[in-house]
Amino acid sequence: MTDHTAEQAEWAAALHAHGRRVTKQRLAVLAAVQHHPHSPADGILAAARKELPELTAQSVYVVLSDLTGLQMLRRFEPPHSPALYETRVGDNHHHAVCISCGKVEDVDCAVGHAPCLTPHWDENSKPMTIQIADVLYQGICQDCQSKQQLPVTSVTQK
Image 1 (tube, rainbow, N blue to C red):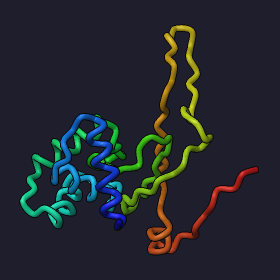
Image 2: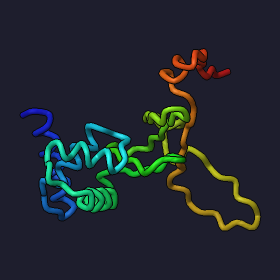
Image 3: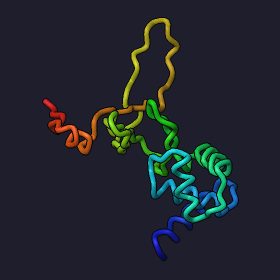
């Protein structure tokens, strides 16, 4: 069984588990997101059309919305960017975004469990039980640093 066939079998099982039909549109969108993580809807449409040329933009938006609601896809919105999608779900990872070129990288959870941050509640607050704290790292990727001839710096811990 090839990786593509194995992926499709996993997605088909997940779709069935959520009471959804396995359609070529859903499979094409899942494959596009899997192979082009952190892509916006128009990038997913372009990638999925290589497999399914008749796919419409409306179909992609409907599928993305549905699969995000089922938590088969994750949608996140970096500043100054359209929503981006990925198949990495169910863990507490974050993202680093290059402020120069917009490249996005996954970053594992800073503390190893959710939530990564705990708020301080003042006396007028009605505290909530925090489930998730979204962390977005912003910086300049190594490619952009080398183009700008900036030294690559690393964070050192004391």
